[in-house]
Image (tube, rainbow, N blue to C red; front, side):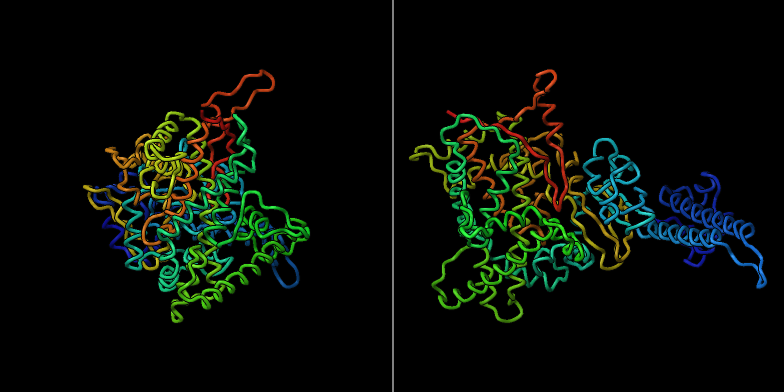
Length: 617
């Protein structure tokens, strides 16, 4: 809360104070008296900011006056400024504007302590400029979490990030209490909503439930897409995963091998999840050993593989970049045009098939269910082809990328913990005891909680969605206090971004003791740990609140099926590198430090994970 001295002043007085440095207390004791003995960290910050602004302005004006006196030359019409004077004037104007921008940014976050940086970390400049001590970078919440953790540094679970050159001020939080105020309560009251500029990133294929920011539009898309995620869909996902695993073993020739070295496990998980996405999502009969096209043109499966690799370019690149005379840009443009044309014809064919077969159509892929739900309501809930395609791509491409990277991270950690692998395999044997060939079915999903817990823990340690960004749609207030503490109210101005830091949440020891350790047991159904989150319903790896991930069980069904099949047949170990000069292998701890690090595209993933599979006997 602001002290009485500040509450008694109006904005015009504040403006006058900016230009009169003598109006400020010059020593800490004066400030304490001015604040009537209250805790005044934020008030002191406000005073310092005002003094800084006033001194900068006075310094710039003095420099400008001095340069004008020195660099003006007389002529018949009087005194004309030289180029140096003009440059000085420009620099002065820019400096003053940036100072005012910075002070305005501090006001927007009510002088909440935090980082002062040149660029907003999530802005274009923040992403493009290399990470430095003065430029945190887009995933500073990961890279700085040990050495320069912003929450420990400012002794708060909620801090500010205020840029002084480019970008808007924002509030970062790793508090679940604040997260729920923003994401859940804020959604219901309308105080917070999805940021418009963030939503636009995911509109490439068309309007969809992930990208739309309007509450009415979101409800429309949610009512059509939500019912498609049901038990029949998950059964289809399980069967498709089982089939793809068998094809992978056959096509890769693993049946006769005892040991397999895989230099990059993502090469398997990306292809695997792509096949599931195409089969269960679009109803396309993809297989592991898809033959090349007979006419030399790319197949739809090959197009989708390229799209998954270049989706970041498609989402983030400006329009002019698509016209660059580069071979890979030209190929990307052709692939996306081909896929868009194919999807339009595919959706139209599904509409016609559903219309002609009426109640006889039994297709259970996501696209068919979307079309059927849309066709049953020709009114406000009806989705056109572009909206249908947008929803399928947004949900399934997001799921494809996140699931493939999460599986890679999970397998990487499991390779370092063989006893956890053994626990999962032991549970598989218990569940399938007495069955011919040990067949595992979708009905076993709920009993395979150890594999699910391992996947949850992999997602916790490498959350694909690093940030959950919400924008204040009106002036509002956040309570930063924990349960049992006196209220700490933070005014939030309309337009301010509140950014939920998923890495901060997942590595917050208040919620997850020993956060750097891979401990699937924290997710077990019979866990008594304080870290246990009941039923996994609040697992923030799949977002939180009303707009949480629709495809959560789609992803977990696919992941659990893949993990139990793989671990039942193979023991997973880290593929250790060898020092060429000494001939010595790295240790497992060295492997973890080298490999289990984050990399960022549209989502967060783990670096290339090299593994060895050894057949179980």
